[in-house]
Length: 477
Ligand SMILES: *[C@@H]1O[C@H](CO)[C@@H](O)[C@H](O)[C@H]1NC(C)=O
Ligand SMILES: *[C@@H]1O[C@H](CO)[C@@H](O)[C@H](O)[C@H]1NC(C)=O
Ligand SMILES: *[C@@H]1O[C@H](CO)[C@@H](O)[C@H](O)[C@H]1NC(C)=O
Ligand SMILES: *[C@@H]1O[C@H](CO)[C@@H](O)[C@H](O)[C@H]1NC(C)=O
Image (cartoon, rainbow, N blue to C red; front, side, top):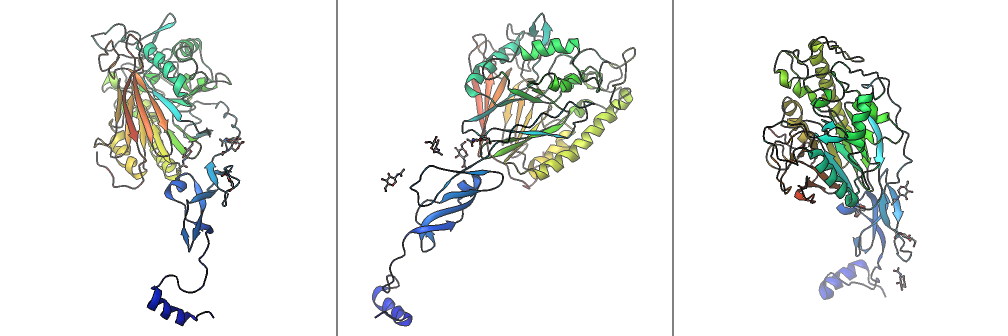
């Protein structure tokens, strides 16, 4: 005869303690819903189940559904009492490239259609900057910017770096290359006074330069067909000119259907979707750094300088509001102010796991440092900032200045002599490039040197970067 509840309680307390009361059979293990573990949530699981009893899991928590836009991939364990699996993106059919714009400025601030790779292999991309040397015959000569020259590295630095990139690319299989600008030394493409934001085409000088200094320089298995995503550096405008044929850096994006050159605007954005996470890339034009409200100030470091932008060269830049050195600064200021607002809105809306900024100048340069990076890095949880301009290879992380935002200076692409005198052995950070491995939890930045005269593959350092959350206390820099 079954005990009544009050009897049970009494007997249980008296004889058995609180456990094992009554004849009720012990509950059997059964599938039950449960909260997803942190790991599964990071893997984009939205619903989880486990085998359990009495409301507690007795076995592993399993993923049974995924959050949007990820798809559930069931594993093949047909025996399993709980059908489970993992989450992975189904890449959409690659959309058509947007058509060539009428004006080189038309796609400013626009988002380029997302890139998508859903494989399980390691995901790599490369970083290079300040890379295009002076064309001599069909070879590249490094632009000489210091007295002491270490032959032969300082003479053909671009080729040394390109050679190491090709060697590493065979193994790493980078998905894309991030190009931080200063594409063609010393003064961009063609002569001052030729800029025209409505040309739509590459001129003869541009074709020769793109073919020899870009296409034929970076090639081979692992680099062929791999897109270069970029922005312009100060030398692409002309250094101390504003009006060389810089628009070609944008229009070359459309020079062929198979173009691997991708610089669709002066500032733009692209989402990169990987198997179970994504990264938002923001490409900015920070060349406002090398402009001055006074056209007579600092002529050697002033894109808008009056002394270098004088008649008889045409002073206007067709298709833009620049008509002379006096209107040049305002044009850069307008673009700068537009970008500040644009970047805040884009970062605010970003739901990707990683936020990555790409621009020519390191974050220490003013006025960008105080007007943007001092607050934006923490407020929007920018994880990684990729730059060049300073001619060497450096990685900075948690060194005080910018808190938990890592920054890279990869200005040692070899177009111009480095700040550092290179060694013959290649054991230095004068020239090189970076190979970046990105996954859901960590970005690993590997710094490669130029390899020296023996063309060795030399890793100079590695930096592991972890996600930076939003709204941390602002860093004062
Ligand atoms: C994301 O996918 C990779 C395979 O590319 C896998 O190794 C990893 O465990 C997944 N991450 C999570 C958190 O599920
Ligand atoms: C499931 O089985 C198929 C065929 O045996 C195999 O190709 C596939 O890789 C398996 N998938 C998983 C997730 O194990
Ligand atoms: C499926 O269950 C049977 C019987 O319990 C077992 O022998 C077999 O190894 C299981 N298969 C898998 C793939 O776990
Ligand atoms: C990747 O996406 C494609 C296209 O949607 C899909 O056919 C394929 O199964 C996906 N691969 C993986 C590993 O998820």
